[in-house]
Length: 238
View 1 (cartoon, helix red, strand yellow):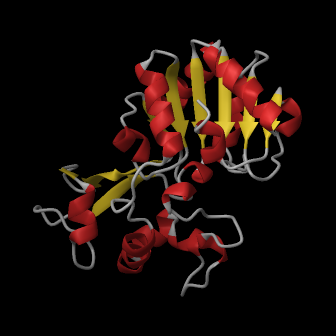
View 2 (cartoon, rainbow, N blue to C red; view 1 turned 30 degrees about the horizontal axis):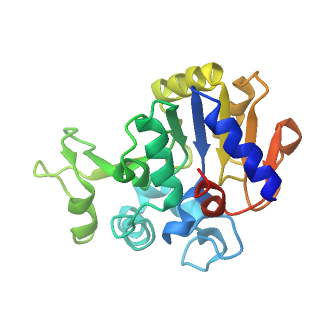
């Protein structure tokens, strides 16, 4: 493992157009639960299955029940960035890291100082009235009672991509461009089983693909370096 981390460190030091593609595992070391592990949200018992609650249909038809779950389980405001978020922000400040592409909605990359963050699944930090499109911040949503309402009377919806909803085309296009141009692509903390986000890595055609994840992924055979270790142990070496 130490040899692999040395290779990782050397690749980072010798690359100047790094792109990072991350999933829930990036934030678990900050205390945020993931979805699909044995202790994740999808394996806990609720009145409705989480996959159903986090769908567009459920949001429209059971808005109050949606917000009960959302406020209890997806409030990331109390969490702080971990060493991986911090090191990525430092790499961006040095001009080496060009983009962070994330499947997370917690906003911790920005909280750590990263600027060019492409959020494939949206963010809890942005919320809009479905009637007049007025913006509301996360504090307003998580401090609200029952269903958060706009001053115009409309229902406010988090700017997160729910099941049955498509990804933002502009965000996807920027992500594809960043991946194509990368001289080093680091994929970390993701099982690479969520489509269509996972399919974006196929746009990378060069030979510096690193996969860092505690468990194996369907794309391990495509990587030049696979590190099955916690992200914190790896990134603290940078």
